[in-house]
Length: 286
Image (cartoon, rainbow, N blue to C red; front, top):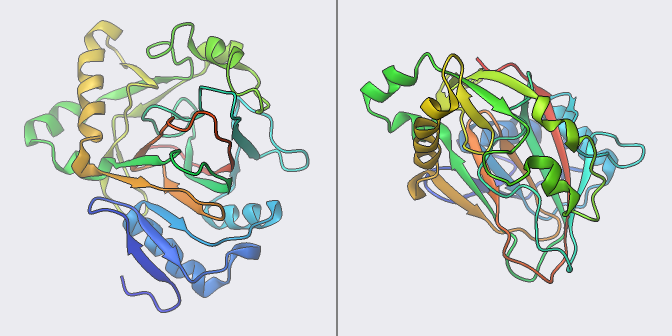
């Protein structure tokens, strides 16, 4: 699209755009929002550079994308229960958000969008990767599309497929600066969502599966399901479907959980990274 009030620069061929020339304090004005929302739909991931946002600003902007969405495994900032500090201290070796996933697919109504605002970033490293799962779906053969068209994924918060001891073990030894909670009950938190979902605003179909959260297909065993889950997950993150975002203080990135996966790269040991995270727009995948 051609924008009148903002400048847009693509991050990669598949998805992602940097946005310049906009002030999002107080949630931005209506004309700017209309353009920004279209850039968001067109590119799935937008990185708005050069922002100076208070907690109130972040909440106001988040409400442009949808109602605030609760994250079950961390306490929010005092007075702002939906905003979470995401911090990795120099002495820590594990980071938050690593491995490819869409946010909280184990909830009945996952968030349509995630906002992540950078306060402090490493001198190098700490980038985030994103993948376009609509493009990944489009690239499938007709036979594969027919095979998976009726599948429903069972998504778990436990993280047991990827982490020894699951979420509870991971949270007991990591993220010392973050206020984590409820990890012991993660195994009981499950939801069922279609493996192929249709974006309610664009009408495009996208894969909605990840080897981090999708544990099996409904009506099938885990042993039967895992080979196809892992194949689809690997297919989604082929290089031609991805982009890489380099952070800097003052960058606000918003991504569309309905048609993307993301992966926070953990390559900055000894440096501090401080972000603020807000998820919005609880929505039933269909």
